[in-house]
Amino acid sequence: MYKIISCTLLVVFHVSITVGNSPKYTHYDTYTLLEFQCDQCPPGTIVKHDCTAEKRTECAPCPSNYFTNEWNSHRDCQYCSAICKELQLVKQECSSTSNRICECIDGFFLDIEFCSPHKECPPGYGVIQQGTPDSDTICGECPEGMFSNVTSSKAPCQKQTDCKKLSRKVLYKGSSTHDSVCKEETTNSCEIDVTLCEEALFRFPAPPENWIMTLIQKFSSTAVTLQQINKILENHNANEKPFYVFKLYKSQRKADTSFTPLIKDLKGCEKGVFKLLGPLNLTSKHLTTLMRSFPGKRVKQEDIETTLKTCERPKHLIKLFSLWRNKNEGNTIEGLKLLKMGQLPKVLRKRMKKLGQFLTGDSMYSLYQKIILEINGNQTQPIKLETML
Image (cartoon, rainbow, N blue to C red; front, side):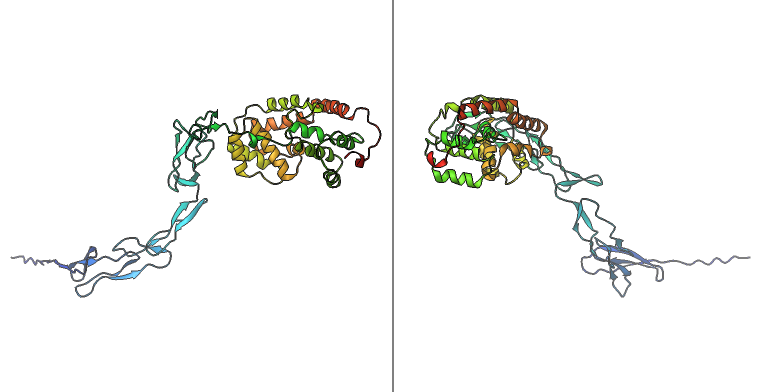
């Protein structure tokens, strides 16, 4: 008895369909048992129908919010899944060919999964490479001859001022944290019209009776005119009149270096102010913060920079107070009381508080009483303004 074995021979044909230079993918047709090399679909599309011996690959576009970003043989598009988080903005919106791309806002970089602020280089260090949305700031210590006096995520080290090239002497030698300060050819830029002690004295609360008229009598030997005096009397209240009369008098006595023996004790008071302020190593940023803490109109940044470079410490502070007072027609003593102390560094906050106390304290009151006796003398009768000038 014979067994009949039936064998079926399976033959697989390989057919290559080549169109253009597009990438290919292998497709096995289970119906015809043929293998084809089909064209892939371009970015933004997917395969709708595989190629055959008669037809090329048929592609279909990705629907809204879906994409493919490369040539492919996929049946499904990818979903635009990226959602921008806090402190991020959309760098590139979702499209048929790309996913949504998010980027940290200016001043921040992607640190693992979250946006972190760029590192700030402290004084003495400058920015070697600024931070980007993907990388942090790189700081480096300022080399010799360079400095940085700010805390910043963008400022590089700057070159120190070369006083020799400017034909000037060095007033303060520079370091990695502050610039060299050259001695100016003249000191006019640091001169002020009225010192803090003079202002405190002639603005002392509750002046004695007939005080303003006594001052006018004492100052009548100068080039002060009746018109100038009348303008002060008309435009200022009783507490302010002595100060503005004295200020007017002093402006007419610029050439008199000794000023007047009547108020020579003020020099001791001014030394006390200088001692209290001390040689504070204040940067441009410190001074800007201080002047912005005062009420009213602000002193210009260029004036702050010039004062820092040209005035010795602590004269630069006295000069800035004078600039603020004249710009605002203000009262420096009251201005110190209204300072926004919370904005100031701790060491500067303490000095400003002590300065205000010093200018309104017992020592100033004693000086005030002494000056009144010296100026007022035994004057008790009312004086007519017209007879003085």
